[in-house]
Length: 317
Image (cartoon, rainbow, N blue to C red; front, side, top):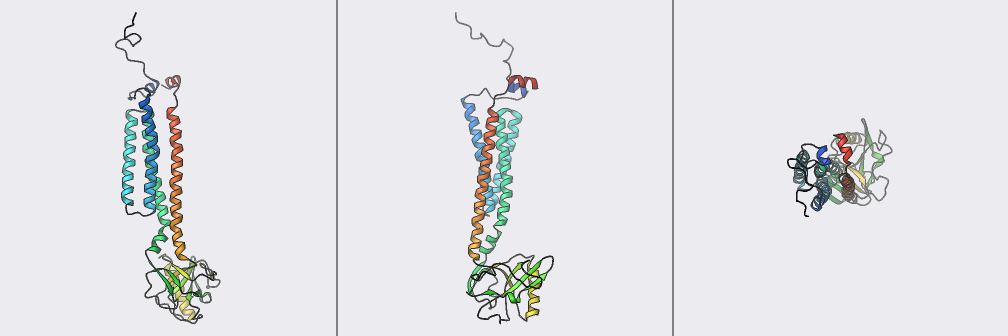
């Protein structure tokens, strides 16, 4: 004999027994029991929780670090997306709870953390690239006589002096303040130290004695070095000028428009290497964040799919 369709159902007027999840979060609405559609939805949430924060971190960090023209737009758009995801996560958690809301919270939190970390990391990287941008925005001159006037080279960022140029350590001077600011004229072998006019000076901090003796700034001991990279620190420049004034008085030389350089063997390659180092650092930062985010998503996936002990849930309530 066929059983009526109502056999085994809850009596009329009574609802089905609540699930453990409903008992734990009374008053909240929950999705139906897990099925293929639910599993697919949660898989999509897991993928989004990994991809979206990683994309935000890579985009913001890369644009801010490399000073891209669209950096401001990318930062604002990423911030808006992160805040929208956080708001949606809060709304979902309040309305539904459970694993689905947990994924939304993970997505929103991950996006916001990615934006904050990317902005801070990008700012640090941008400062490290300041030397590159300064030097590439200024002119590079080749085969310059160091005894000549610098009036036409005020825009120089890097200068490759004529071969044989050297730092005249015998006429180095140090100006002592809280630190020792050291300067020495860049001279030509042809002048053999007899020139009385010097606009080009090798300079550095705490690389000589207070009187200028034992001048060791830059690549001064490299016999193949005859180039300079402009020193643009405005806080140190007044002290270098005071040291030059001492040299003028002590050695009877003249410096109309003194320019200060770090004496280097190959400033062109050195500046290019700054870009390479920071680019590699950005790549490592993106990779590191992606690895950490992957493990966070994997751990949450295990936590969200772990079956709950019904008796434990009932005891808690």
